[in-house]
Length: 494
Image (cartoon, rainbow, N blue to C red; front, side, top):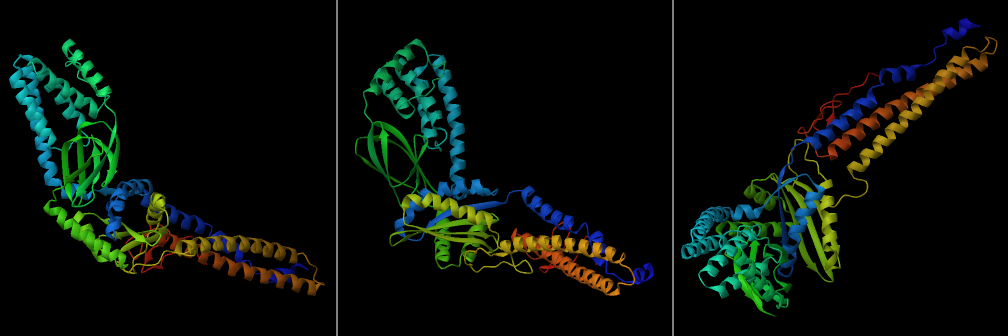
């Protein structure tokens, strides 16, 4: 009974296959994990972010959206942003830093003169310090100039110029009602002067003004606080002198003390540096390229100008009954990494639309060509079944096929074992059991091959979609990717 059964060749390949390739899934999963880990651990790249207007009507909107773009990129990406303003105004900022150093020296000389009761000399040094600070960037340092003004008020007071001293303190408190005065400054005389200034300030009623700039729109800082972009109505501001700072990466910098009156329209002119004119021409080219759906060349020129690895671009366009945002992320060699278009009928919804667009641009990473070359044509937004989706589908199908193959292999092995116990006289039953076991084993082998193919293909698609194309991003283990084909397989043999 046993001899015929022992001579029967039942295919037990599925079980040998499973044992020989047990590490396959672990290897491929490790490949994916390490590739993602390498991306997460990589140092952030440097990028330039710009918002451009595709028509004159949307320039103020584009200016207002720029801080929002920086915020959203910071939320959705680990890229390090380089500001165009710093490059355009670098020489201006260097000169401003020199003036601040000189102002600190003048302040110390003024305080020393007050200590020696030489109030005329003190007023001279303190006025020079204020003049130097007013010609530096006070957006984040407005309290520095208020500190010097407080000391000049004390010099005015001891020179007998009480009215000027009170007006100086009213100006300080009008800019910063909660300003903290130097304890060394708060002598009994100054405390009395401060109470008089506070009482005068309480009599003032807030007003509204209109702020405009030329030649174009700019970001507004009022007394060191960001208040949007021009043109803009500034509400709840007290009459009197206030510090207005306007900054535009394209149009330049302007800063001025302005005496505010109710209902007044204030117009400030920005002085455009030579580098600003260069940036203006680059942004015009970017806007034209994005409108024509060919941003590659102009964006690459902008990236080279900024010395960065990539450029984030968002363009605003006015439509009939709404607005359109066109966004792109372009590498320095012109490779269009991501592209996105969105529309809304509501101006208020533009910020939410921008957030969704930046999220989409940061998640997408369009693969390069087989040899790592840049792909410069703008592509349509990806649908549901893009390469990433196919990667998950293939991976899932491969895992499912592997599970079914394992079940069939176990069933074939069990049936082969049962066939060995069939008596020799029941030959038909024996042949039927052996045939069934062979069929199950064959199906299991086919499914095992499909499982390996699905898992391998799915892993490759996910790696490819995560940003590596060509030979530039071969994973560390598991599969070596060359010319977009998997050449090396780990985990056992067939």
